[in-house]
Length: 408
Image (cartoon, rainbow, N blue to C red):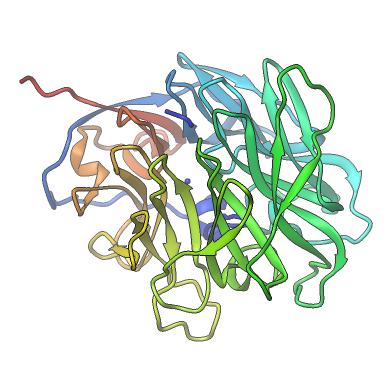
């Protein structure tokens, strides 16, 4: 694999996709001990003041996005501190919205095209706030895979739009694609149904890549895949079409086996937003899930969760003090989990969960007045990427946090 709204959507509209309000706290109490890190800010940008690292691979490459001075956003790749603009599929904006980077340097994400959507839908790309709404706002958005300067389109499942989230070392890409079915469970200007999809990137192949469907749970109309490991196990959601951004699309958390057969995973017990975000090579899964208490139904009240392969229940990772919500975005082979804690009276902060303890990542670094706002991915060496608020300039930049080795 490689050494995070949402999913189909995914993640919370504010915390994952958009540029939510970030507050620098006046203090940051030490909650627990953990590893120490050095932090490198990736100051190379595409001209705007917002960048974010979303994925890190075994070579230390970072994939994510960087805003441009004209307000558009482009998928970006940082290598040795230098930034590469991955461009678009013809539209104004693109991004890497998930852990879409493997050790071979393939990057996956989403991009607006120059095609006009004949149904004028509010598709996942803009509705989830992953990329800025263009003017006009009815452009088709498609998943992409990028390698060595070439961006290729990932075809939908008969409809207009597609969305790519994750890739493994075998070149298997997962996400979701619209079908040609007018789904009556869709709402909020979404018309066509969508299903989880897998695309196979073949060495030396060129052009558009066809999709294969990963079915929803029996009786559900919609599904979306968010991550895949090297064993070919994919995770995602299943439910009804809804708005194509989480909520009732995520009535169930799903894991598909290597043959595409779905099985349900334990949740935290609520009705909606049961969203796996990553799966490691052991089959362990992390993400976010609503506990009981949604009022009204569909409200986002999610908590980060960890599910160990084969366990009867999922573990609620809870929140940092003063926060209301949390989301786990990534897990490595050592079982270290990273994510974000937000909402309530405390500031939005990145977290690290290990040894059954939730740690504020800001307590493990010495970077004041800067603040680590979110931790989106962690590799098997423990290196973390995400976004950091520069306390001097106010810019939000991508970062890499590297564990400090402890002398034996």
